[in-house]
Length: 407
Ligand code: C6P
Image (cartoon, rainbow, N blue to C red):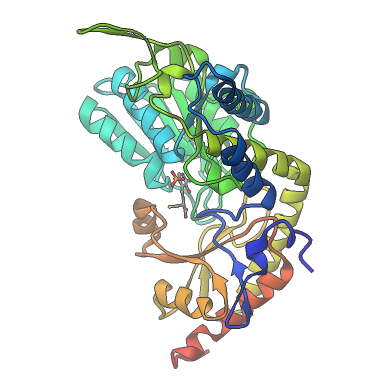
């Protein structure tokens, strides 16, 4: 019996008598009742436009929004709440850094270093900056286990002005050595933009300890609603950067021809904000703290080892990246079945109630590097069970036979 079943109603859902086996957690996680209820409660009792009204309801909405910011600050150990900006998602957070920092502080001849495994959200913004500013993108290529060898890390050099890196790859599941990357980047005066979209749901992210300059993530991959994201930035950098979006509530004073801007964090939060989302994110953080990262890590390590072990016994299945569980490997398993398109694998698994993702996972340069167009991807979370993995493995075993291919 799944101990989290009562908290996540969708996990108990059945279709054609088959239980949902949800293994697409890297795309988005399911939401616990406490999060759903917190959002519901906010809209029932406390909804008003924050930072605008001088009446009790608006003051309450503002407090809930700012309390959520403080909750995120404490969760990622940022020094000050004003270093935590709310956005829509990790993509918007990364674009904010690219447009506001990149377009103003990256110059012709500079290099932007990034692993080839980056999600498009942490790659396209830098392509845009490089093209506009005459900078060069320098790619770091992982080895067959998905790790970045020394020779690739050595590409962070005197010309590097910025390193953009995911904490965890959304395709290979590799946990990249952020502290080592930051050490090298800072030694040459480069800033580090950390994409935590796939790490913070699974591992603690301490921005002070990691000493990253920026960190981006999405609420919806860590039990919170869609439409709320976070950008952490060091105060001194955020203060130097111009606003990304302009509009309501991010100004100090506006005249016909000019404007001055509000202090952090409002400078980067133009327009009416997603208070319900922020409240949901805060509730998600509370839930994660209740479960505890120790439990999350231990559970996922067990499930990953169990899944990789089972997959190794199925002929015609190729797993990309590290085929062994371990500290530098998160529960994201990309794989292919010989002779079967990943979309077909996904559809066949779906007929057994198993939800996985198939495609390029918004990482096309990595797909090219791996020599494939697409992969299947099963991604785990702490509320999955060994029974889930058993259903997944049993379904995977049937795929080639189902299509009349040899097993
Ligand atoms: N990856 C996946 O299935 P958004 O869409 O903005 O919430 O997150 C973007 C993003 C940024 N970085 C990484 C490492 C990511 O994995 C993602 C989202 C999903 O892999 C959807 S493509």
